[in-house]
Image 1 (tube, helix red, strand yellow):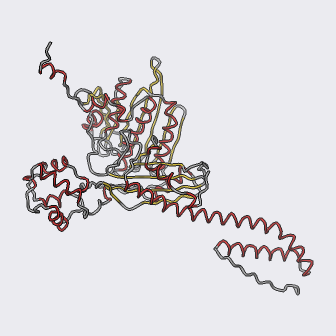
Image 2 (cartoon, rainbow, N blue to C red; image 1 turned 135 degrees about the horizontal axis):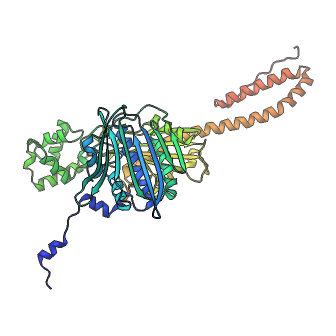
Image 3 (cartoon, rainbow, N blue to C red; image 1 turned 90 degrees about the vertical axis):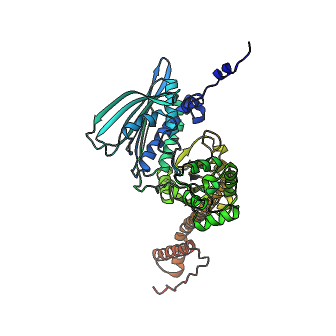
Length: 529
């Protein structure tokens, strides 16, 4: 039987975004019941932190995990509550029930990019339990609290509202409560989840975080009321432009601008002089109307924008680094080290994307002595727990000659690396390992070495104190015997000589601790005393 065009056409079918991710849930990290528990908690917590931080609210985050069986299947109920800005009432269905719908489509740093992760959690709950997501929310200026139960229509990528209730708000509460029930393996996920909560507390020392599960309860109180700098929306950098971006930017113009005007108004750090210099170098007229540029012109323009090496580097205003002080506070509270130092590097860029590297080294205290440095990785304040061996951070930490910095393994050393950017280069779809990008690699290495020099100074100081303590013990051992002998020779009270010898010892040790290599002791004739 011949195959007709009509028969072939019936074989083709478009996929909605929801259906695509339904079929490819591994892309979002929901590859198995263990990983799904961790991923669901992570997505909900990160949404909660963004809903507070970005609106200058000190976060109070509560995470509750309950488990029960249904026909022999382990179900995990996960509830996350925040005190954030809340979600406008009529936006709730789309925010939780429509893939690629959210408030994160801006060129600035945030934990997520499209608000995609929570929808993946909703889809995973539908796939494994058939249960809807429960949402309770209220904004600061709303008089109501509203509740929804929502599913996602996988075919149309639209929310299905199963229940909707509105209550009059009696207390001045604002924020969001989200509850999901998924098929999961809590005993297997427990260790990862606990580590995720501890590392989240490390990178958010300004947050109260409470976590409770059937066999685990942990709480972290904020140790500071200072929030990190707020990222601002930024224009794209010319090095990061592509052809589709150029076409979209030009088609969205309300008026037909000249190329010079287009460059000045739509890209970061381009003034009149820079725009004119680029046009001259690239062979374009500054006065040509951009809407008259054809595909060949735009392709050439894109290529020249990437090649031009006199653009200013992207500014860091779209980024929100934690800062050295906050990073140290978080580490002190969670790792309880003897010594900690932190470095925040100046903004840098790769392929037109701004990024900032922060590094801290923690030493001693409660940190166990191990054969290689403990590594804590963060990307845009998100703890990275999987794929450490594939991460550029591990590669750099292992390449450092730590003996140069007086570190002898096994050693109680922890390395904390935080990279923030508007576009992070990850290895693979799991987004758990930062890729080997030369510019980022160089910044991480320089930051680690800067912090390591401070650590070396601390270790040298500790070694010197230890040596002085050994000398003191030796001196104290012989002082009574020497005092007794001198007392008999000089006919002076033994206790008097002992006091003088102790004073001389302390003077010698004090000068030695200040780096004085020569100490001159003057002896007085005390025989007449």
